Length: 172
Image (cartoon, rainbow, N blue to C red):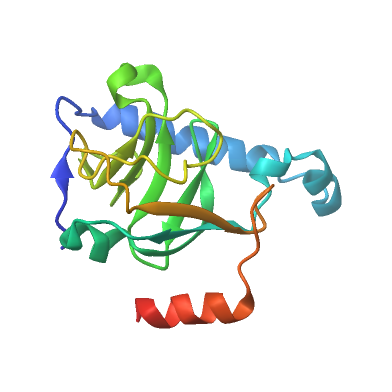
């Protein structure tokens, strides 16, 4: 089990979670009839699949061991991309203001919308910010934590193949 820090005052009723799951299924099914070329051409650049994240740094070694690594695009939540690290349940995701401003922003946690989290940033941009993350949530900003876009995300720098291979070897 991955340990983390509980986000205070954030409990979701089961019906709330089901609504998010059903909403995501409905969004996915809406594009089923579209051709692949038409769907790709009409999708905003920031939402095209293929982009990912590379997470490095983090002064808290326990949290660093959990969140460092390469994340791939893994759907969407609240109109922003969700990223997942490998096949593990470690996600970077956005949560909107529906639960109040203190909970709006980007999160790292073992599930999307869960009450256990490792890092938080109040930014409301379309993609996770590169720096300025609170580790843990409610803690000080960790100046060493870096979240960089890689791969096919709009405006994302491409990591060199050697660099990607080295990063993957470091994760193992």
